[in-house]
Image (cartoon, rainbow, N blue to C red; front, side, top):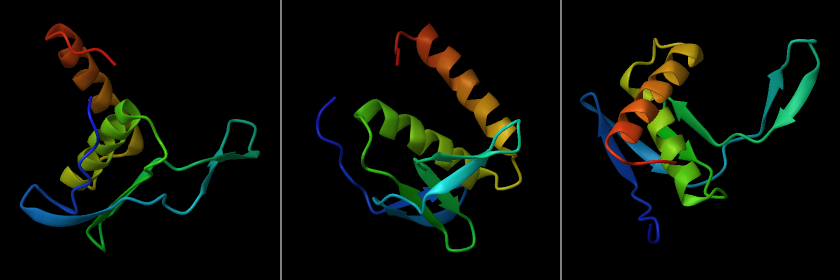
Length: 102
């Protein structure tokens, strides 16, 4: 892959979103022992502001995967994180079938 073209806008399901190439605010993940664990946020879809944040401090493949993930959130804001992750796994299977592996 070559250098990433950092586009500024994208239309998803008829709605125009801004893309900001900056790390979203850091978040915490509540793990199974109810302890807060710091994890850097790779992307974020803000439906109200119609803005997708992409942390640029990732490899090209990670940026690609993050964009797909956040686009899924933008496409259907009612999807839970679990459903978006299931959609990602389905895309992974499709990409592998056509010879794209990451």
